[in-house]
Amino acid sequence: MNKTFKSYIAVWAICFILFNAIAFIIPNELKSNFWNGYIFITLTFFGQLFCANIAFKSENAQKFFYNFPLISISFIGVVAMLVIGGLTMAITAIPVWVGIVLCLIVLAFTAIAVINVSIVSETVSTVDNKTKANTFFVKALIADAQILMLNAETAQTKDITKKVYEAIRYSDPISSNELSDIEAQITADFRKFENAIQTNAENATSIGEKLVILIENRNTKCKFFK
Image 1 (tube, one colour):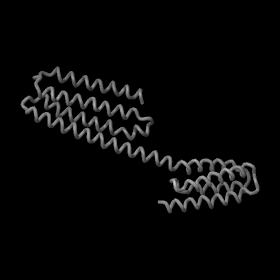
Image 2 (cartoon, helix red, strand yellow):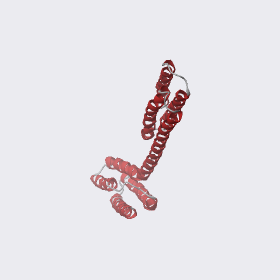
Image 3 (cartoon, rainbow, N blue to C red):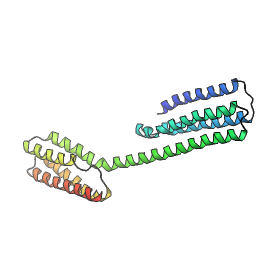
Image 4 (spheres, helix red, strand yellow):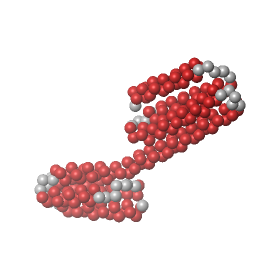
């Protein structure tokens, strides 16, 4: 992300320099309207860079995806301010207070939009992280059960490992605090089942059958706590 942000800063700097060049090269009276428009546009430019910095500082690609609207919304704000601020700078006949009010309105709407996007991004990210944490138990167990099923050697062990695998695979993926006890029991029993399969123990099938029942009990509790 850092290398990408450096490239972004380069593009941002070119745009900002271009704005300054146009502002001071084009003949214009440097009166109050000009400086008011110039200050508001400059503030919006740096505000946009600040938003981009937040987005590019995201710790991973998914977080950057959630924060990307910060860049697009703030960019729209810059464009809108360039239009309103540019007109304020160019048209000296506009009353000073009118130019300031118009620029303040654009700045306020941009700030509100950026804040709203930031809140939504943080909320979605929090929910996503919570969902990942709540589905880790089943996903990890599915992976272990699949490996165990693929490594089963006899017809009997293949049959019971497949049954356990399918029971886990079609389980409710969402965990909760209320399920912590039964999930801890499932984990312990799965390790016993895993050991029994690996050692070709005679009681592997019975352990597997009990494990399937325990998984079904968990699924029943999942429905109850929703």
